[in-house]
Image 1 (cartoon, rainbow, N blue to C red):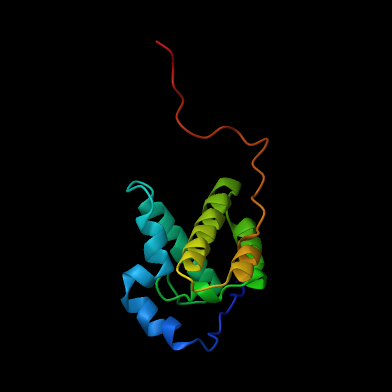
Image 2: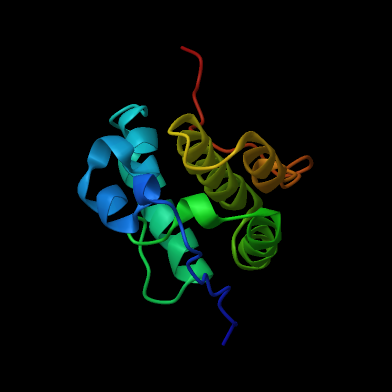
Length: 140
């Protein structure tokens, strides 16, 4: 059994009250990020965000995790757990989706620029040397 990275909420100003974030989709970073995606990629990204939220805080999902409170220490620990438990391409998809939500939180002014850049400054997982993925097509 792996340990979770437990998120403890910090005090926030009235304009960032968690109740507002969870009831107003136009202010929730997950809703903003997911709405920017193509319809075909939404289910995969949403399930990935649920995975990340569950690792960060047991019982949390993409809607209840306070994404705007994630800092570099949290995202680096999340990346390490993701890399340990998922294939490289899946890990990169999960890390990219976490960056996307962090970027949405920054654009919504829920996190300052320095905290966003530090939290999102995560290396991708190397996939060089892995066999190609996708469909095999034959020339007619």
